[in-house]
Image: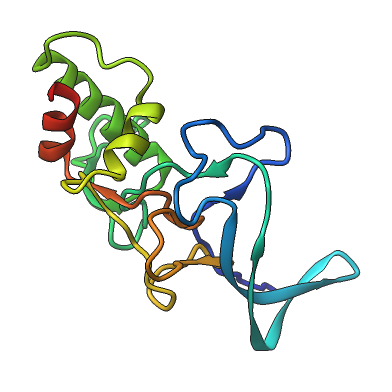
Length: 180
């Protein structure tokens, strides 16, 4: 019997690292809303008949910091040529995940650094400060129903959410903030 399960993003709380200074005092950090969709019986995941809504507090570094579209179904069109068949013309596929988003973030960082007056350095302390500004380069994804990593959901009105961090990035605004 083949079973399929949901997939979703990561996020939540580190049990190894404490809350860093740059996250302290940001609304949503250390708190969560969640929807419990399954339980484990004899080590196997079992889908609940009725999902449970949960809210609470946890300690530890909150992850992720920011979000991007990593969904392989709505992700990015890529032309793939098979490595072992050089005679193949290849095909278009839609792909996603960290393997697509991480290089995008790295490329955006390089482009912003090229246009800046100096090195950008470690982003995190700066982006949490930028997120608190009136002209934030981030769009918080705080909807409880449309924002989930299959456990943590958005927390309406909070700046930070465990499923999506500070939210999505407006890179034009972020570059201006770094150069401000």
